[in-house]
Length: 230
Image (tube, rainbow, N blue to C red; front, side, top):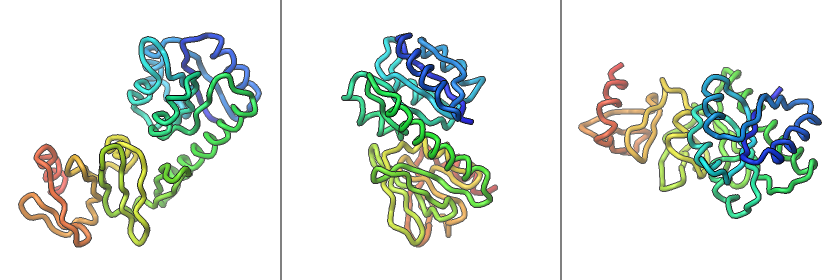
């Protein structure tokens, strides 16, 4: 069962989502909100798997709302404005529903969410940990133990993986760090996240990792050396 909430400043739009969710047996729509601030308060106490989220709202846009969500929650954006589609997908949205949408289109979106959430749950329960990111218009599975290092480039990340082609995804350093095991990974620079196990040596403010030199930024130096000594 997938726990979900819906946020839209227009009650009729929420009525549509409630109606469609009632026809799908694996969606448990727990609550609906017309005020994004109330939804954020709810999520802090009651995390969910999926958000149905309008983008254009007066007090807080759906984009701003999703960036403020602390836990790893999937999102399906709903809006009457197609110009937001690119930005929605840049935030790793499962899907983007353009109002007015049919039940068939809604069902397609929640099936995508079911697949994505299933992959996440499988990786969480597996002894072998995996990470799923959106790249080349599909979800790509990455073995966390194979990550060499992660490089940030503006709005993109380059995930360098052992014996595999580098994966480029539109994602922030902050968001991917949340999805990695905290005891195994650390950010050493505004542009680099590394796994401790692959560090070969450290000299001054440069570390050698798999034969590559990476700088340790001033802002990250203290935290890195504290964790590294442990």
